[in-house]
Amino acid sequence: MDSANKSRWQVRAAAVVIFVLGFAAGSLALNVYKRWARPGESRQNRFERMLDTLQLNADQKTQVHQILGDTRAQLQAVRKESEPRVAEIRRLADERLQKVLTPEQWKQFQQERDAMRSRGRRGGPRE
Image 1 (cartoon, rainbow, N blue to C red):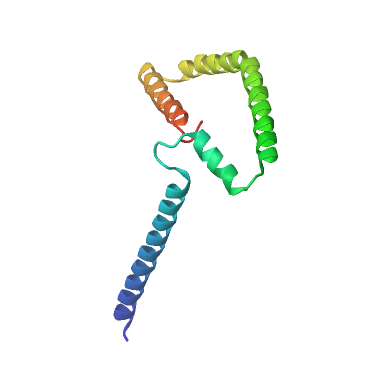
Image 2 (tube, rainbow, N blue to C red):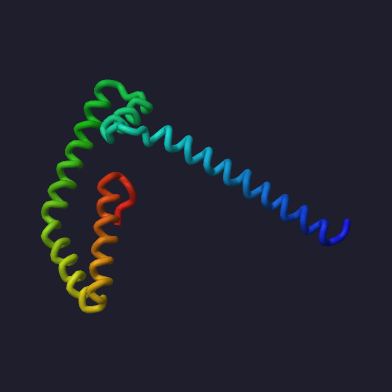
């Protein structure tokens, strides 16, 4: 087998391997999506389904809900306390950015940032 023919077979083999790996990754991602990101299902329903898989007895379920409810309330209080400081830090960062960016760049930056934040609220990655 000459080197040109051998090279063609290596390229074909590499293409097949890449295709198989891509197919496997896609299948895995679809499986994960179907398992955890059911369209229309609320966060609460997904959480309840997760608790069901733990096979908690009634007493455990009550205690877990109490613990998580207390934790949620504490976290909300911390967020409420820190909100003004976070807003101030963001305001100062905006002032500094406006000094560096042109008006067009600043407008584009704001649009991109707002888009990122809105994706975060819909369950996508947050900033």
